[in-house]
Length: 538
Image 1 (cartoon, rainbow, N blue to C red):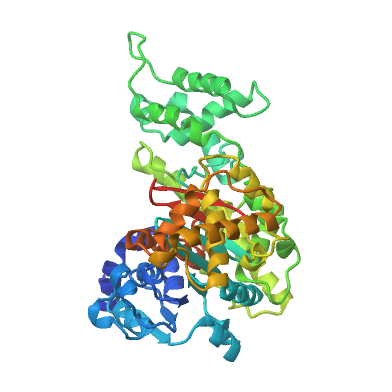
Image 2: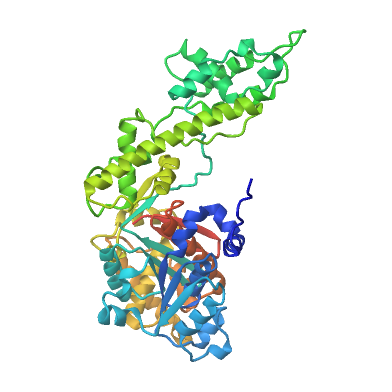
């Protein structure tokens, strides 16, 4: 028999290089990351830290937009710059140093600000996967937000000022295929077994087994047999604590006894007792998945429908027909104390049914593609397998425009007012940062940026915050401490804070690119002084 051909050196080297992250988002997630092109506006400390955390895991390409020259303040706050960088193009130097981190990544830069590009080349942003705006002034940010919202390209807005930082995600629609839940429940369906599983488990007579076979029976079989006994006297599976305790007693009653009438120590029955919580539960379609299936984009497909919505519709059609109200079977079986033959027999039943479910969804996907006039190879079977394996994790998350947030008539003032009632809420920093933006728009400088202006700037910043709150129909802030604090920062960036916010922003960007894990919705505020953070939705 010929030995399998070894993997190419390039493949094995790549696997070794990205081994730890591949365990998080797998090969298909890495492929999406490597196909992405990210745009960064402003290569300040925060911007370069964000991009660094995307370059290291192998983002495909990046483009930096920055018309600034490197100042002493940049060198003091940005670890990517040194004294020799002073006076040079910030975009150029940052690009060169970031590319040194990973030879797999491509990068370029443009020595212009976003305003000039939007004015001179309005189509420039059309082909980016995601745009990152780092400490971009309010006026420019609103124009950029409207443009990207129109293009349906995600925008990640990052800001830091002294010990305070924030992340705001603008995404019109984000679809999630893999949630990666902390506690994933096994898909055993003991309450609604598929025909092949039911026939197999019904054919087993545990009472006829000798002690060895009895002690090496998979706990799945034990749970099924006990559940059948339960259902012979009850209308439904055990759901509350009392009922599950009664059910556990059924399992204990099934343990063999020795000649003295004492229970034999059977490990598989102990496993069955532990598995009651996770395995004896109703087989249903999660609420989040139902929301996807009932979404207008799933019900009414069209020629421009994305892969997500086409496969979601195919899974929905499967559920309503072949699936008898259930999602495609995952086909994975948890480890169990058992002899090999019994375990493998059940494992093959689950695998075979999962394969059959995928084939049914694949047929329905091809049918939908024909109806939509799309090529049959526009979606491949590998994608369908992935969606079927994670069918219970499908989600859709819709956001709001940053530009709308800067419109007093559209912002959610009630959310702000309710949060400000809590003296420990970080919402006060959101309000204060928005006040700083107003200050910058009006005076073209940050409050406290010049040493001899700190006290006058406190008065001016208070006026900006009061004006902002008045536009929202809210009263003044209870305490002025936060105003004084932001003025003392003098517009300074602290590298440790930028590093924290930049890393967090990169995490969210990877979630958006890979369609794995759930991103924040939609604002994150961080206070480095107390090491606390909170999310808000506007």
